[in-house]
Structures are given as structure tokens and as C-alpha cells.
Length: 274
Image (tube, rainbow, N blue to C red; front, side, top):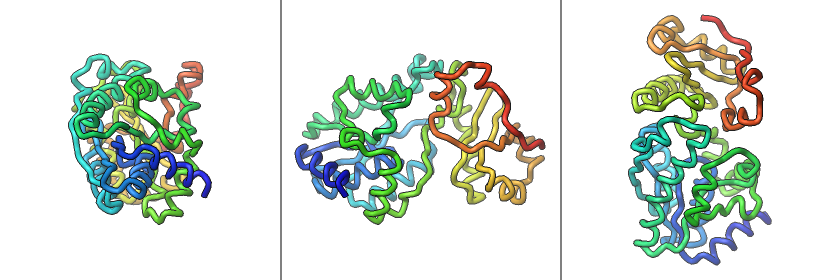
């Protein structure tokens, strides 16, 4: 494949690279190709923080081990920054600033001239303030540089035999909160508990959107019946105060609202009443 060859050539020219590796499908493909080309001269580093579900961290470890790439975990402290926890529209800028302010010194100390991330070509057309923070710190985005879209990421991953090629997008837990609502560790844990419960039912493509003291679950229509049949709805609502909306989960929904009117963004969707 032409795009894959271009990606391989890009890494061949780097000699050594540190991969900002979240365990998502994009950064996992970057880690895979980096290791295939560079071997032990590639290092994957995952940032652990309260906004990352422990299950996602475990997935990252398993995937890195299957790829074979050396893998390390570092702690980031974006929750110590009020610019992040106040949850402004550019919250991701402060998250990625913390991430790359952690990774860049590590890369220099270990002799990696490049820090690369999993930003793909489609991300460049969305509102992604985190991309700016990464670029300011010298990070590169190999997928975007060679024009690989999200769809192409999945196609290439499948062609390489990666078993998680169809893994749903899983942005950080902080993305589940409307801009302006403060983020706390307790709120993140609440969302994580609910999403963990849903995953244990076998549901994969989902979001739990928190707002104030309530939340709503977004599921594809085809999963609603499974959810209703397998869930003690009154108990779940009593424990987590959840509203269930018949809306397909979509990454970047809050970012997309930046370009919509607030009245349109707040229009209710069809709801499954409990």
C-alpha cells in the first residue's frame, strides 16, 4: 500500500523515535510501523492519569507486548493545572502540553530525536487545540504527514493483521464533560464506573456523557435492546442517575459544537425513558 510505504519511509529517515502511545488504534498503528522499521530504536510511552481508564492502560500494555515494541508508563499531572480542570474549550491544549512537557525531556535524555503521536489526517480538519500544543513542543504526526485518514488507519491495521483494527475510538474521560463544568477525579471515576459496567455487558461503541449530577449513555440503536435486556435499569439509574439517549456515539462531539449554536447543541434527541 502506498500510504504504508510512505509511513515506513518516514520512520526509516528518523533513525530513532519515541511514540506517544495511548493504546488507541491510531497511535498503535504508529507504534507498530515504528517498531517494524526501527526495532528497539523505537519506544512507546503511555501517559497514566485519572482521565485514562485502567482497562485502557491494560489494553495498551497488551497491544505493545504483541507488537514487540519496548513500552514504558509515565505519570502526567494535568489534574494539578486549574487551566485543565476548569474545562475550557481548549482543555486539550493543557493536557497535551503536560504530556509533551513530560515526553520531550524523556526523549532527549534517552537519545530519541523525535517524539511522534497518532494524529491522523482527519484530525487536522477538526477543532483540536492539543495538536497545537504538541507542535509547539516539536512533536511530529506521521499519519497526518503522509495523509493517512481514520479509515485508512483501520484498513492498514487490518492488512497488517492487527486484531484491534476495528477498536472503537476511546478519547480520554475528560471529554465526557461539557465545556465549563469543572473536572475532578471523583467525576472521572463516576464516568469510568458506568463505562466499565457497559463494557462488561459486551457493549463496545459507547459514551457516557456527564453533566452536573446526571449523565447520559450514548449507544448505537442496535445496542439499545441488548442494554435493556441485560441491565437492571432502575438499579442503574438509582446508582448513577443516568439518562439513556438513542444517539450514536461520535468522537469529537464537543469540539464539533464549537461551530454550532448553543440552542442547536442543546436540542434533546430521542430518549429511552426509564
